Length: 88
Image 1 (cartoon, rainbow, N blue to C red):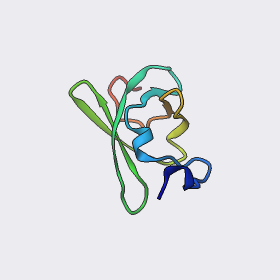
Image 2 (spheres, rainbow, N blue to C red; image 1 turned 90 degrees about the horizontal axis):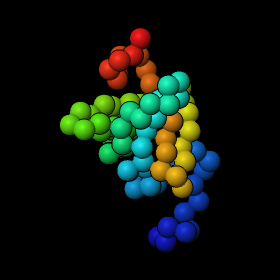
Image 3 (spheres, rainbow, N blue to C red; image 1 turned 135 degrees about the horizontal axis):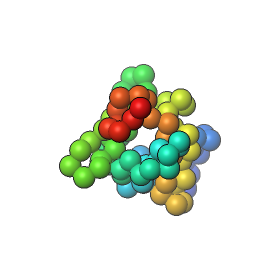
């Protein structure tokens, strides 16, 4: 299949396009890391966010993923409490 023949629904992305995107907190605009991998699970995908030698796992759900800008390689999320350090 040619990539140009694929018809993706709004809000759907090729995993290879997500890898390498910088991930930011929607409330603080702080860079949380870079999306390094995606695990496909039964309920929802899980995104792997690398920050140096640390890795954080976040669910790819509407309540967490605020926006994805493939062109600018930027993802904005509202992280669930307790996943990233320095959260209230």
